[in-house]
Image 1: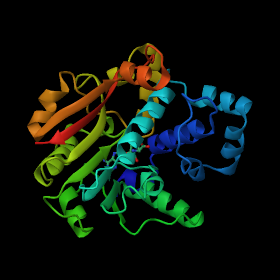
Image 2: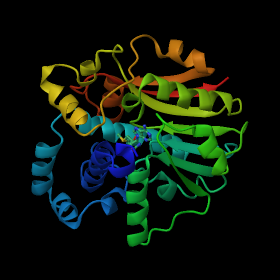
Image 3: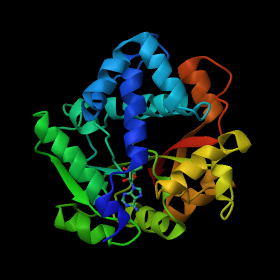
Image 4: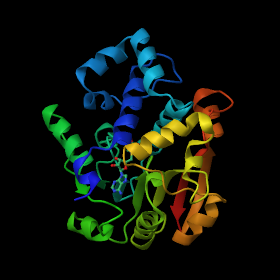
Length: 289
Ligand SMILES: C[S@@+](CC[C@H](N)C(=O)[O-])C[C@H]1O[C@@H](n2cnc3c(N)ncnc32)[C@H](O)[C@@H]1O
């Protein structure tokens, strides 16, 4: 039994807390629409988040890495825009490392004709399902939960058991995931998407800039080293990073780049500012050849 079978992912809880916080914000740049995220939080946090003053204190004490809160808000908005405009010809949606992603609920109308699979480690997925049950949140009938460890199990076997069909047009979402996987797991996930999806399938993921073996780069300069140490402590050591052009990586898996946004471009687009003071993350939209 691995750590992931027992412990709920701290990073999934962290991004969920950021989305819930953002939902309570008043200003247009900081506010986003994840009304489900707060349901995953204990009552006292919801009370704190409702009041500007308390929310500010909470943000200062919890979101210490400069720019990380803004990055997560931008990433949520970017992916929400794509799901909102869901292409009806897509038959299957696969959300890898879904954590407390609530898109299957928030966009149930848009996704109603597709088969949706949420993939995550068992402890995190069980925690999510428990809260859905307690809060009486109805899970749409077209959503299937697949629990597995990408580093240890056959993704295809697990997916086929759950009803996944090969050679269909798919939407693949990997939000906040790639940098927690080692290179072998990345290769398994990208090979699966490449080998078993139809032409024009869509892929959205984000990644960290850096070179293999230099994981501390994930957190940028010395100011953000603490984040790296916290992740290692939580058993979610950063792994995969890309140093060169993303096209060189995508070509191995038969995907073409549609667009790539740097942290700076995200800052411009969603916050109307010059850039986040943050180690470099990029978000990518690609299409299967
Ligand atoms: C940073 S969280 C992102 C969660 C969600 N996508 C979001 O943006 O809020 C990373 C997620 O990947 C999952 N994950 C990381 N490594 C994994 C592995 N080897 N197998 C399965 N899931 C994994 C974690 O359980 C966690 O839910």
